[in-house]
Image (tube, rainbow, N blue to C red; front, side):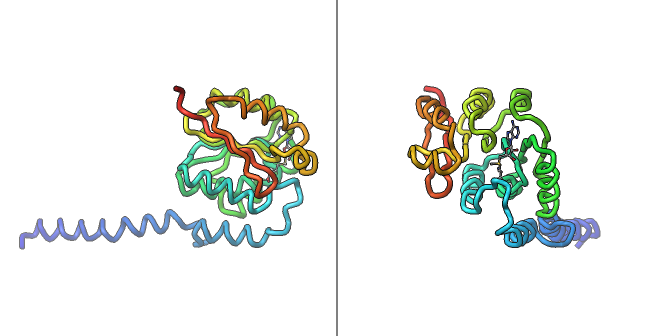
Length: 226
Ligand SMILES: C[S@@+](CC[C@H](N)C(=O)[O-])C[C@H]1O[C@@H](n2cnc3c(N)ncnc32)[C@H](O)[C@@H]1O
């Protein structure tokens, strides 16, 4: 065997060794834990400490599944609070190679959310903005393939109207505390979402359903125009 062949073989061997190592290290956080391990232990530790109007774990898991299943990458949340739903979404986005912009008007909750994102190991996947979403949403360029609306219910329809042109075809618009059952709307803090629901349901370009397994989640996909 020639010397150059030995060098070539050596190089190939190195690549074969290095590529999997780079992959393994890229999945690891600074503590040497994988992102999955860090998020799972964070969520487990905080399972019973989401007091700030946060989604339940089961609704968080629905958001996670929607993002992962459809390989969404450009996500927006309106209403961060202390970050429970954002953590579920950003966890999924860490797998699809995406990122979440999340907006919160309350400085204390915003600060707590940012600390939670750090503890969960997800800061790199979240752009947390402090401000009034009534204004910030209009300024966002987009486009988005996933939106989760969970802020002031009376403004749901306005948020949707502002974001509809920025939602990609095949993208998904979700909104919390929306129900097709009147009694549920009243009992689950969804007062004010009825007009929004009727509006979205009436759009031919949106395929809209309600997931009633948790606190009522509107799930609406943007269809290709016919
Ligand atoms: C139901 S909580 C969000 C819960 C969060 N999605 C979670 O599951 O962890 C609604 C949040 O929206 C925020 N909010 C209300 N009006 C807002 C506005 N105009 N702009 C930005 N945030 C707003 C509130 O301060 C509150 O923290």
